[in-house]
Image (tube, rainbow, N blue to C red; front, side):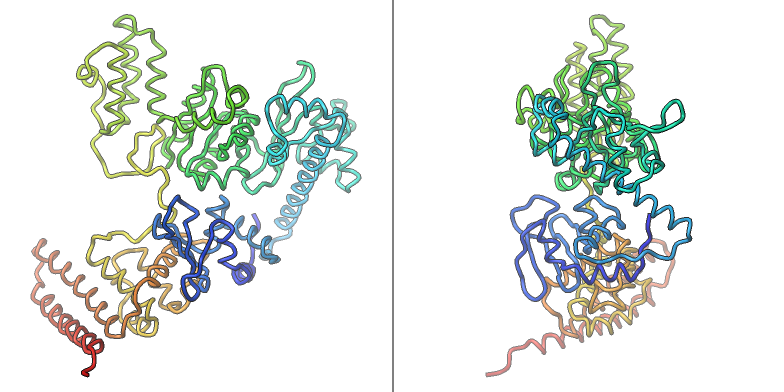
Length: 606
């Protein structure tokens, strides 16, 4: 991956119009000075709670807590990493990026990869042109139409057609200056078995481009349309650019919709994904005919935290769901199951019953744990005691993962009804519920009480903690009155701030209080998000007087001394007298600041 210079990142930051960028996702209105407000593009809301500071290049939502800078915005909206966001912004705003000094071998590898990606992109355009313009592709167009797929959908996914010739692409690529070795390196041709010469790998097939989340073509999946003497589907083989099981089909098209929805639908095949998108389920991606891999699970997690499995209802599809849960175990993902009718995949369903049917099924998804319970109960006839014992035994590890919840009680009732035993009896046979722990990340079995999608940016902890609350308010007042704030901050050492995140923010603000968006490490999402949150909150408070900032500093110190005294009493460590003396001194300063404030705001005599 290319490493771009710091100067390049600064040029991008200077070139980006933050209001223009955010306005591509939501309508903004000026709220005074360089501040704009609108509805948050990250969650549904009726009352605008989303704030953009055009001067600092920061945004923050007071509703869902997201925040950051231009790079964070593009990363979250487009599903990209930092380098991808940098390249995306550079392309949009016409900035030429400079690569850091590379050793010759690394530079050559990067140039070669870029050339192979260019070759694959040209091949994709060649195949698309053939699908829509050639007489030979009439059968392919007819097949796709019979599947109920519309031209708009096919063009959105850049579906194409490979001519049924040995050298269709080969000849075109050679004319454009690409070598046979380059064609072979990215899997577009193969060597003849005789060892002399090469030929097109894809022939007489409808082609679906396999892309990364940024939309760069890495390979192709081909559907055979001729007699049954060929495999129905073939994919690009592993090569310098493409690796099987690393990507998800359609992620480049679905990523924005998945980010907004907080969910991603996982289907099996190419036409399933196209049919779902055409039906309005635009957060759907495909497995590309492979078993779910660790890398694909990571890709799903970057798209959304809730995964809806829309895999075939047959035994192979059910096994795939169980494998998916095993791979997803331990990750911050919640799995749900879309109840497809037996014998139908999403494409069949849409074709038979229309778009509304697919949307209804997606909305009717159930927690993965419910799917597991239903599956185990359906594996036994439950006509005799031995069958019921086997079902109960199979369900024990399922219920062992569940905490006390309404869902657990409901599922116990399902088992009781199907086995014709009292609920209390069944509950006694199954493992006791896990003790309620503090909420954590969602589990693949769907048993977590945690949120489907956690806040995109961490916040300062301890809203109810008086010390943390006083310290945060002090920082806000320093931002709102930077002149006095700089002097006040200089009196407080970093270690005085009890929250790690706020301590890091203060370290940045000591030198950037007047322009908090300057000098940030744009790859440090936690710090960028917190600075955006603090800056936005500071804009909402009335500008404090110098004595007001000093009074808040004293409030912060008093809260900290009170905590130290309470800890000393609890531990019996002593030193309370010295702390009390210190507190009295700070309290006198506080009272003096309050009197000064009152005098400054007292109405003049008539």
